[in-house]
Length: 455
Ligand SMILES: [Zn+2]
Image (tube, rainbow, N blue to C red):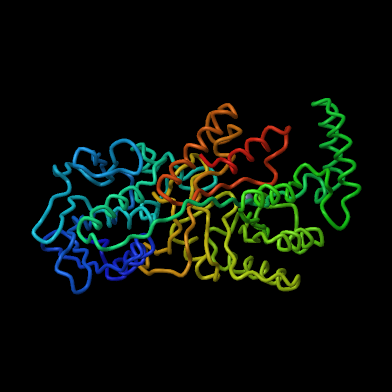
């Protein structure tokens, strides 16, 4: 039988705890006693964490889920309601008890952290959607109604309190809530990179189907007049405006470019085109970030991810754009765990921000904190960092993935998720495509309010 608590996994979890709490703890497995001792070197006090070695190596979603009411036992919760305990059956009551040397916690918080952060649940899955993605609806989090809660962070919030009561002298890190916005550049221009015959067909649609003379004229103007840079009237050219909004809110926008073609689901531009080079120079000049958006067919092909990363790096070098690191996100959020993970790591990329679901918003990895990746197949820690994606705009707006809801309801839902990240002091990540503002000013207003919201 496999166990999750390998030496490499425990060392990696030490790093996770160090990043979270600002303190290095020893993690000493005591399998015969079914717990892991969390200790401070040279100190007799310790916290015993229940060890459920085999549950958290499971690659299916049919494990049970208990609930724990922290308030009943005098512990604080970061979010209201009882805390889901995936893999738990009959939790002991009380769950957290005092021992001679500290405390005993009757739930495997570290195992849960391992299972969620490594996406062990997704390894080898075949119940995929039409883009071969593991869908939210197949996940344990969705089925047990905790996908919209960063439960790893919530459990670590509890662990932090137990640490505080065990070692009152230890000062734990307090994290500041942050917002990160990113923009997948699937279509930098609505017309410029399309052949005239296609633009002509679009123009016919504007006039015959939609009776929209304005759009008809804009199409002709943009196609004709786009020369060295994107045209200001181009409906997809929202780059300057996105950077304005970010700057007004002390944020940096990250723009991820497609640098290869593996399918007709990819972009109609080449990253080396003079217009795209000019756009990259402008993004860099304004202090924003350029990243990689590996093309549709790369998620199972590490060599192609590396090739596309090299192509982007070469273009940046030619344009004298120096960035300390390159991160990004997979096109269509296509991801096969751990193939794609290993591909990103081996391509020398700094971070990936794919891991949210296309069909539902929320916390695919159970956390709103960035963290170092761990490969659940090779059982090796990685230099790649995972920046979980909380919301992709088209998951909630537009009715592509689920039933269409009003713009007001969509805004409320996104703000609710942002509020949860704020409550944990984590990072709210929002993907909003530069091309997702067509159809009036209302979407721009929604976007501005989402970014500005300080409540
Ligand atoms: Zn994309």
